Length: 228
Image (cartoon, rainbow, N blue to C red):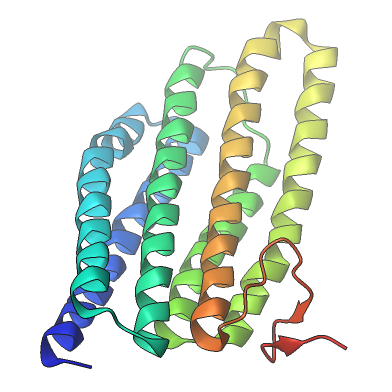
């Protein structure tokens, strides 16, 4: 690896860590704005999106430039390909956090509506998935990535239970329908953030092992080999 490529990858790694931090904060603030009814936090999330978009473009352009100029192979090639994909996942997470913030602002018109208690547990699970996905990428930890992928089932179950609760609420109280729909939408966006964290974990497996495991590709994640 040339010294220039080496330095560039180190800088890209730092940029991705910084982007992860911004996006994680956006997710946290968006759900706080929803649960605590704090519209100023929702607006803070929305205002952060331009920064994330600009960083997303800068990271992608740098990755493509390095691929074109240096034509890397093996581990360096996989790292840059993975970085491009994870960078895109982060930008989509930020968009989803903005969507949650928008739903939070809409719920301000319904001060008597109570957000389901189970949403807090779902939030904690999703944020832990996002953090662990980052750590698995930075540390090249396939076992941690596998745990993130497995935990997506837990978030999916939270989502199903919250939807059932909200649907029952709408049946019992017609005046709560509009507010419940906003909350329903927020939980769906939160579930999609968990999906994005899962994508990051799947790309980490590719980075370490070269195995593509998306769509139940039939590989043993923990070992990176074909399952028998």
